[in-house]
Length: 167
Ligand code: SF4
Image (cartoon, rainbow, N blue to C red; front, side, top):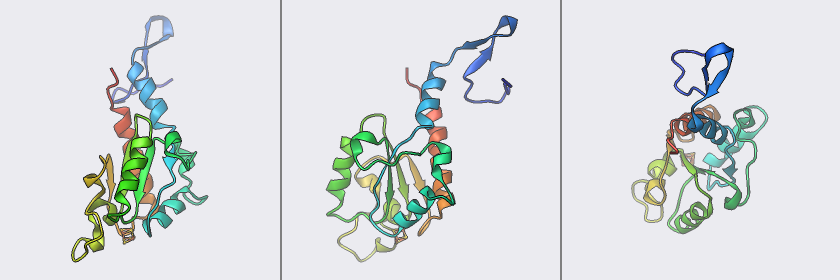
């Protein structure tokens, strides 16, 4: 195994006589979590098409460990908010988030989920940002963001998880 001096997430460290000493339990736990995120199937409007595209064969988010999209929050640990959140949808989003097991993560995808997007002004029915309802880990700008932007956000989320202190 080649170890680089600037590796911020060392899993194994050199030990005398050529062995490796596993000294960072945090790194192993975080590595496992970051590479096996299960997203909840959740999309409310047009951004959801781009999210589905990111999961499809051309972009294939499975390459990064986001393999198993789940239809129930009890089996998911990542929610990608893809689309407009209306006042009527907000309690549903909160309930889904509450039903997800810890640790759980949130990506806000697109202008609507970040700030209300094109509906920021002159509307009475749209929430002006998902973070008014649940905590958000990563924001993806765009209307809509391209699948590459979502993949980049997922990788950023993986990096964030790898920096988590568990103990
Ligand atoms: S950000 Fe744009 S593309 Fe995404 S849901 Fe809102 S209006 Fe649709």
